Amino acid sequence: MLNPVGVVLLLCLCLVAAELKDASVSRESPRQCYSCAGINCQRSTRQNATVTCSDLLDVCVTAYDGFMVSERGCLLELSLASQAKCKAGHEQCQLCNGQLCNNLGRIDFQCIQCDGSEDSSCNVAGTSLTPSQCAAPTASNSYCYVKVEGANLQRGCALSVKQQQNCLGDSECSLCLPQNAGKSRACNDYNLNSKSGAAQAHQLFVPLVGFVSLLALRALQ
Image 1 (cartoon, rainbow, N blue to C red):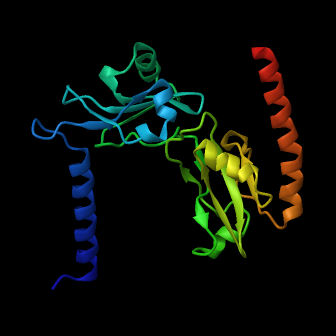
Image 2: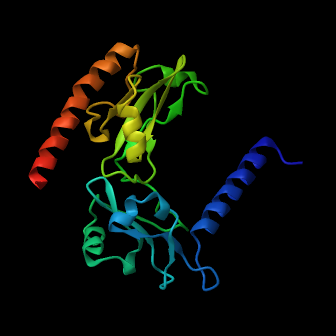
């Protein structure tokens, strides 16, 4: 019978073996990556499109324009512009060597992701909450959010335009930009204590969005 230390070591070996299996490639099992380009990267119907890399030594890539996903696929089959970002080690290129591993946002698109109904620490503001990398967004902008749900708070990544608009229209939901975290570990580490604070931000933000939209329409006329 294995002692506790032996059991732990066995579990660790199993986990490592599983990770190596996920990252392994062979002629019988070439690497597959999520694939999109341009506007298709923002279409929800194209999020599960994949491509099989023709070169067994190729890797999966997500390229970004700002925080927006601009291209995904096999490195050697990407556009020259995206390949140049990757070769330069640019933050707007993320490489990975697993199967279908290129489904994340930029490495610095990180938000606290938790539900206060499952983890009470989610209801408390502060740096004890650890952010994690968000999934690849379909929106052109990347936001974190804090939302009041009953007596609890939810924190996470606002990845789609619909999700962002729903939060914007909810007086008990607040959006923030991950790059504005400042000295905090994540921008959404604050609390929403009442409707009034979120509603005030909402009242300030909605007219601004309307004004910008009006200017855009006039420019097109």
